[in-house]
Each structure stands twice: as structure tokens, then as C-alpha cells.
Amino acid sequence: MSTINITPNKKLINCGICHQQFVDPRILPCSHTYCLRCIKQIASNHPEHFECPEHDGTIIPKNSIDTLKVNRTIRDLIELLNFSSGSILCGNCHAIASKYWCNNCTNSYCEQCSQRIHNMSAFQHHEPTILKEKSFELMLCEKHQDEKLKYWCLKCERSVCSDCLLNEHKDHQYELIYKIAKDFETKVNIDLSNIELSLNKNVNQTNTSIKTIKDEYELEKLMINDSMNFLQRIIDEHEQEILQKLRDIDINNNKLMENFKNHLINELYELELQKTTLEILSSNKDPIKLMHARPQFIDYINQRNYILQNLQLPTKHIHYIEGMDLVQYIRENILQCGRIIDGLKQPDKNIIYPNPQLEKLIGNNQTKYEWNFQKKILIDEDIKNIADALKTNTTLIKLNLSQCQIDDQGAQYLADVLKQNKTLISLYLHKNQISNYGVRFLADALIQNKTLTTLDLSHNNINDEGIQYLANMLQKNSKLTTLHLSQNQIGDKGIQYLANALQQNRTLNILHLSQNLIGDQGIQYLADALINNTALTTINLYWNDIGDIGAQSIAYAIENNRTLTTLYLSHNRIGNSGVEHFVNALRRNTTLTTLSFHENRIDQQTQNRIKNILKTKTQITIYW
Image 1 (cartoon, rainbow, N blue to C red):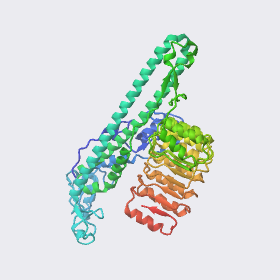
Image 2 (image 1 turned 30 degrees about the horizontal axis):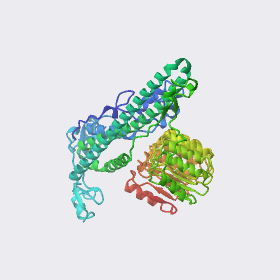
Image 3 (image 1 turned 90 degrees about the horizontal axis):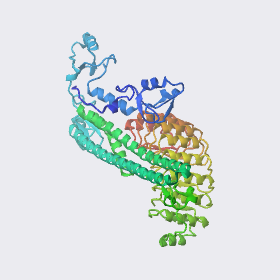
Image 4 (image 1 turned 90 degrees about the vertical axis):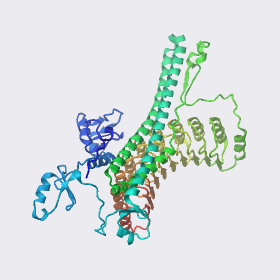
């Protein structure tokens, strides 16, 4: 086996504390990774809690260190790198690096173990060779011991020998394994390069937006200071108030963009892991290992391509400064000058905004039960007109405003009418431009509203902060039964807020959280809530970042939950060990009827075995 000289980015494999290669890498709740021993060393200097070494504000209890999840991607990358560089532990003592390879034993040994074993009379005829000089050889077929696995069956997606092609795989299409592995390597390289180009483009756009926000802040700050200096002795206190509000908005805007940028950087980091893994596998010249890694690469590429197709720059918090031109003329009204309208500019009530088509549409539908404005481009004044019409309407029960480019101002208009409306049951706001600010207005309104049962906020710009507003609402609202939050930017912290609310909520039945940023820690919070929750019947967690640890948490919850009937876990990172936890859980569970696992990392053998174990559970359908 020849050694491969590959030097990946040190940031990928080196701990930020000890600056050495990771040993037992663990992930903090803020997603930063360090060696377990380094984390314990940092924690030893604090009594009960300690902060992430990056000083990002994340606080970790000392008693939870051993439960931190392993960064499997980094751990596997280091193991693969060590294997490729020849740093393989002896197959006998498992303590010293191997020096020799024995074809007869099919094992590698350190020098001491090799001498001891091959001095035995039974093994003296073996001919061990220097491990570094061992070249790759195709494996022998288990069924046909004199034939090597030279081919790849396209139908069965497995390596086969010549005799296999004449028997079990007769009439199946096949390719030489070297050729198909090379073709796959080329395709993955191209796909990874395209993803890298797209991510870099988005990072550049984000940097440009951050600079624009900063420039706007500086210009507005200068305008405020120049104006207020004219009457400085009178307006000092007022000026400071305005500047503080402006700074708050600037911080929110930068935080929004920085969060988006960090998400892109994390994607670039994950991309670097994939590229390095591919480089190592390619350098090994072992097509079987490469093809075995094929599902992981395809899953990563499909997920990232889908994410990039729907990626859009967050909408920044717009604000306006009014009254600065009045400072020189209206001394007695000085306290009214320089008002910063917090994100949403109130329209001039004396200006009449005409939209004859919309007014006609509203007029013709006054007595109907459903209004559908889906995919119509509506500005804030259009939403205000719709909201005004709802104030006097007593028949409408369903309002569809999906894909209408509604922003936070439009959300506020709708929130104002929801506080007094007594007939609307369903409100669909899918794929708009509503951020945390708009969600705050809607959540506050639903605390008062007594009729709305369905709210769709999927595919907007909502992150953990916005979820906190909704969670507070769910603790007080007793009517909402269906909540759509898919395709947003919800992470583990947001799920923690939501889980705390679900501990108390007794009415929400259906919760959609697909295509977000939920990891194993977030699933742990949700699983804890499910143990006590007696209302939820359907949860959609399709296409998140759930691994085997998260699968274990949710399986335990299912074992104890008695109301959930449908659970979607497709397109995650659940492997064979993760799905094993569901076996005992499903044996005890008597309510779950639908469970989906397709597009995870569960092999066919494991699927078949679990199907056989659960064949008597006829009330449940599992999609593999």
C-alpha cells in the first residue's frame, strides 16, 4: 500500500484550542468543534458553566460535556487521512502503527507483532511485505474465490466478478469498476466545483450587502448629527435616543446578514470536507471504497443543489428617518424631529392608493368563504386594502396570500386585523419575504385571536428569533391546530423555544419543520417535548441535519408518546445504528401509522431485517 501525501486545510482537522489534530472531536451547541479533552480543560476553570472559546455567547453546563455529540464527519475524515498516509494501527496489538502487511493473514502488523506471529511454525511460510510497498489489489469474490471483483453491476449497484456476470447477474448491465469509479469521481468533482462557485458568489453578495448597510448607517448618522448640532443644547437627550434606535437597527441588519454569511461559510466548510474526502478516496485508487461512499456524495450534492436553488439573500430591516428638514424651522416641535420609524413606515392617510383591479376583486368576493390571491404581486398598500376589507367581512374563512412578496409591513397590516377578526380560520403566507419582525406582529395578534386554526409561514426569512415569538404565542393560544414553518432558517435554538412551548400547548396537531437547520441537539429538545405532549399527531422533519444521535432521541420519544400518528424523517443523515433505536420503540408504540426514512443512510440489509422484525406491526407503514 503506497502512502498518499495529502495535506487538507488545517482548519478542518486541527482543534482551535490545542492546534493539534482532533482527538475525539465534539460539537458544542453553537456548532464549533474541539477535542473533548480541550473542552474539559476549558471547563475546569469554571464552577458550573463555561463559554464557547469563540466567545459567541454560547454557555455550556459542565455536567453536559460528556453528552456532547461526536463530530462524525471530522472523525471519519481524520481516520481516512491516517489510513491513506499509512498510519494504520497494528491489527494485533492495536497500539502501534503497522509496518508490515501479510497477504496470507490479510492483516497488517507492527514490527514486533509480525516477528512474533510469523516465527510460529504455523505461520512461517507466510511472506509479510513492507506495508508502504503494498499496492492495491482487487478483492476476491466471496462466492467465486478464484475470481476478482473487476466489475460493477449497474442494476444491483455492487461489485461483481466474471462468474457473477454469468450467473446471478446475467443480463444485467455492468461496467469495469475502474471506469465507473473514474466517471463518478469526475462527476462529483464537477458538482462540488459548481457548489463552491455558487456559495462563493453568495458570500460575495452578502459582503456587498453588509458594506451597503454600513454605508447607509454612516450617512444617516452624519445627517442626524449635523442636524441636531444646530440646537444641541435643547436636543441632546433626544438625539441620543434616535442614535440608539438607529444603532439597534444597524445591529439587527448586520446580524441578519452575518447569520446568513455564517450559514454560507458553514456550507463552504462542509464542502471542503466533501472535497477532501473525495481527494483521499481518489488518491487511494480504491474504486470499491469510492463507490461505497457514493450514497453519501449523491445525498450531499442533491441536498446542496436543492438548497442553492432556493437560496435567497435575507431581506434587511428597512427603516426611515423623518422630520430632519424641519429642525431649522420648527423649534417648538423639536421633539418630533428625527423620528426613526422602527422598520415599518406608516403611510400618509391623506394619500389614496388606487388599485381598481384589486378593489374589484375584493368587492366581487365579499360574500365568498375563500379569497385566493396566490402568486399576485402585492405591495404594502394592497395588503392594507385587503386588511381593511377584512375588518367588516363576516363570511371569509380562508385567505391565501402565498407568493405575493409580502414583507414585514404587510404582515403588520394582517396582524392588526387578526386581533379583531372573528371568522378567518386559515391564513396561508407561504413563500413571501416575512422576517422576524413580521412574525412578531403576527404572533402578538394570535395571542388575542380566537378563530384561526391554520397558519402557513413556510419559505420565509424566519430564524430562531422569530420562532421565539411564535413559541410565546403557542403557550397562550388555544385555537391554532396546524403550523407550517418549513424552508426557513430554524436551528437548534429555535427548536428549543418551540419545544418549551409544546410542553404546555394542548391544541397544535400538525407541525411542519422540513428543510431547516435542525440538528441532533434540536431533535433532543423536540423529543423531550413529545414525551409530555398529548396533542401533536403529525411532525414533518424532512430534509434537516438529523443524525444517529437525533434518531435515538426521537425513537425514545415515540416509545413513550401516545398521540403521534405521522412522522417524516426522510432526507437526513440517519444510518444503520440510528434506525436500530426505532425497533424497540415501534414494538411498544401503538399509535404511529406512518413513518418515512427514505433518502437516509440505511442499507438494504438493515431495512430488510427491520421489516422482518416488525412484520406483525400491520398498523404502521414505513417508507424506506
